[in-house]
Length: 434
Image (cartoon, one colour):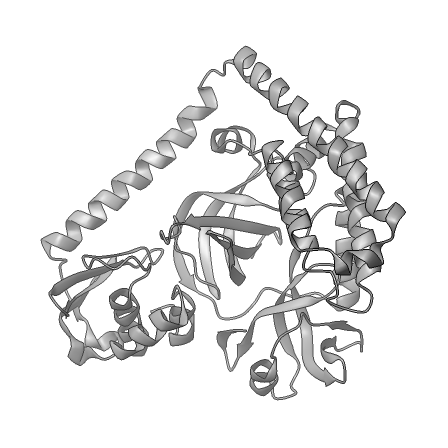
């Protein structure tokens, strides 16, 4: 079993789901526990007998229970049993209900790969595509004109007055941008509302955000003058979706063993967003794998932090070359360590270089080499062996300090330009999420 118990519990949709899964983490709750090279399976007695199966190649799962949480407590329980003792599973041929499920998954995977190959030769109705794009572009430009005027009014009146304004002013502007088909900028404006009064220097930070958006507006107005890769980045930041077939057709493909160094799942209104940071073992490339889930549905791909994925990725078009999607996955392997990390000075140099090419990237994934958690009066910092330090995002880091024990270790982080968020670290040869 590649995953440890903590990694399994990190897959839970919420704390209640994790607690329920832990209650089923003993072999006595299960019958017909079995395994082969392809899967784990078992029967769990609840209000009915539930069939649970897990694909060992990528930890995809299915349970016959009616739960609307994904993964459900039965899936978590079976994974926890496997993480504790593989000997609890009898090795042998998969029963029909497992074999049929695996066959359907394989057929779906092959169909997806065939579609990705076929789309490269699929003709595109360029005239219809251009007509739709022109109509949307007109709406976006109108929306950008309005938000630019609104920002100018806020600056003229003085930012300090925003503390007395109702929070609805931010959602109203965001809704107007959504109507203008610029949802990417709408998300920015919504986040601005959380800055007001959050820290003593919030006016400086908000003014910097205004400047960043003004730069984007000016770039969008001069889109035709820019390089194609940067044009694509700007469109994506504004909110244009890149069709999956375009990524399959034009995206740069990299085949590698990808270390999943960190993962973060957040709730954004009615959508769950999962960010997984991958670093190629051979290429050294970094990739951001994004997934979205609405209505409590499971994420399309099962991916766990602290594992290695033998896979081919396709990068989304753009100068940033950061977001990527899976084209083919060959399987999951145990990860003994994190890829070689960077010093904080190297991290900042790399981020500065990336921002010089694409200044609207909101976050980057890194591994900081030989770092320690240092408590300070203002919170906590991550310090490397050279003595350089970065502030940590607000939170409770006693667990991280306890795990590290003051000993330098490589730490996977997410850097947003203001602070770093620790995602995971290796402790005694085992990946631990933070």
